[in-house]
Image (cartoon, rainbow, N blue to C red; front, side, top):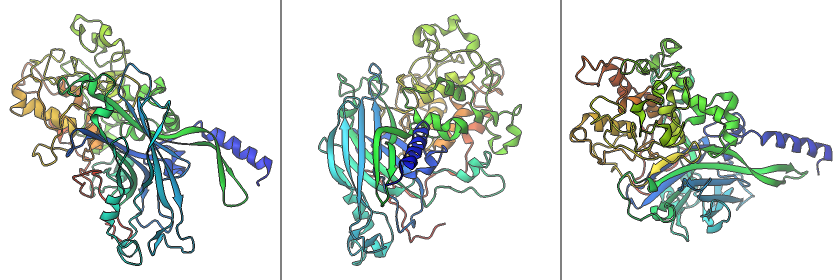
Length: 570
């Protein structure tokens, strides 16, 4: 046993470390040293082939090398992996929680190979528990669940000297049904997130200037927990099984994921370690890229130790005046980031409204009769959306990440507004759930856009808005109707959604334009159409990486099979 002094020092270090935590794709300093507990991405969407269900996928362990043996990646022991669901704004905190914990064994410790003669080393199984009362009690709904093995290579997987099965068979065998009706998968998969990480982190060089773009996560794996849940299970108590319409507010859920560890790990003289103390959250994720591209590095660890229900209000400033906007402003640092040249935020929308950092946005209308009955009226949502001067993006970026968007003026498409952004327009989306902060918010009543629909687009709500504003028959009526891709990000998140591009376009003012706050080069006195060059620049902007490196599957769990350790990396 280590000395009491050494144990005391370790205990003090652990107490210090639990006051700081972290999140996805190595986004925050501390979690970069704990990859097994690191959330990478979160997805929530209405299942395309089973629309009476919602599929939620939480990924962990960033940038797994497929050939990273002999101790291949798998989920960690002494970690609680949790998916949290909020379905009722009248109740505090989570309403439903799925908790998965893992156990690992070595079936043949006499070999250095991970798989040999049908035996697996570091073989993982899991227990899945569910709470329907916000975490007060849990019930096991799967015990001894199978985790798919690493896709080491054909000799380890397919040959008689290995597991003697195809990897597709092993992957399918890891899909099981819980006692309460959910379909569940746990195991490695191709990382479904696609982005030019190298370019983005090289001071916003996406698309790259003068060189090819590259998906920085191509041919890397992650570990996925996928749960397909009947919509009826996710509805708050008393909600009808038939929505009133496609924007039914009772069908809105918020989803976030986390990982937690025991507070204290004690190293003993042998190879064993013991764990004790309370469970401490060390990782979380809701909306993609929040911690990566919104929260500054000095505050990432704090952001990650919190839940959506106790966020630091000081962090809201990074949504009111986002750093990325500085690189889309020629009066700031726009000239230093030529890749963002197509993204220029409205400074004089409709001749007067300035949404650049430090501008007042719509705050100049505070208290005006024109706001009566709108979402910006203090009598409707209080000061939620117009909190003060100098917070221009409180009306678009902040609610997108922290409340969802209500089907209330001005959050309707400009179609039918006759040039007045504060008039009633075409109802578009309602995923408003003002209970807590950063989550994926999804209206489960919105129909699925089939993946083979010619209008299906990785641009999610950006594309839906473009169709609603410019394409017949959607732009010929201000009536509520389903527009393809209304089920896309940020109304939930589908695997195919190009979230990096969508979020950069949103910072560039695309959401403001969609509701009628047009770009500066639109003059209502002379222009026939608000589809100006500035708007086209934003809508046609691309990071240069627009799809995943592998095709997704058409059935649950939809993610692509993991890369093999023997496949040639491009």
